[in-house]
Length: 313
Image 1 (cartoon, rainbow, N blue to C red):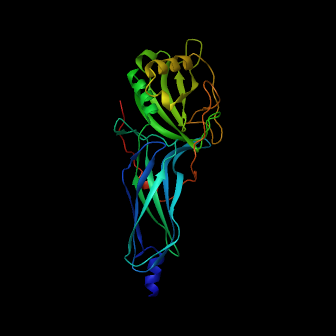
Image 2: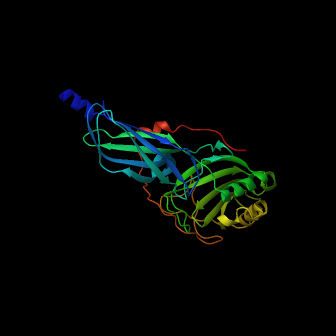
Image 3: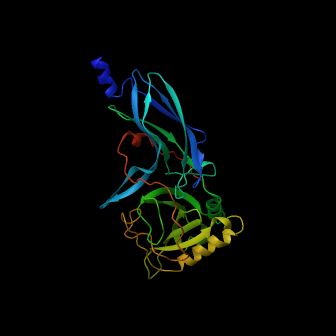
């Protein structure tokens, strides 16, 4: 009996948890639906809480180096205390709201190279090791995102890489502790002006702040430098705008200026000496709701996030 109690405390013979999503595909502002399935172990168990959390890989700057960490950025309890009998099966339904600022992971049916996203289920058991489960999630763009990405493709830009940078963009109302950068190689007609473009969406219920960071080429008497542009668009504009013309105008306006917009909070983005922030064009949008947890997860889930590969071109 003592040996069984010791094994139970180590998680051996205890309850197990398995989360089944109705559909692992979602979009910012929608939800993830499913059931948390519990199976009792060899002995009765007191469940303290069951929680769900969205986790992703975030690039973090520390001094002169940069490293990737797994961060939980949205969390919700799906059950409070309950008693689970030996071998008892229990299914708990849930509907997890997806924050509006959740980064896009999949475009044109393919995973963006560099992006990972998962739903972590945590089962807190009294006097025992916490049980957990991880399910991969695909976040697809909203119509306004799709139209802007389509415009970049139509203009000849080729996708390079995407990642998440820990920090805040000054002048933009963010609710999450990071922002996404979608990087493109310059299209031929812009190649004399810029090397690459980084695109950031900061989305709310009302619309999107679009931030462009262009790596501008140097001239005969000038050094190369980054220039930034910020533009506010509405979800309602998705299907009534010539986005190729608009994006081309954004790029030409952005590359015609000189200056850097500094980031704050957690350092400069992606290994540069300066970062994004400040108001360049447009106005700030509303703050999305939702519970945010910005703690790093230093557990075994690091191993579950390989490079999913795939890109869109």
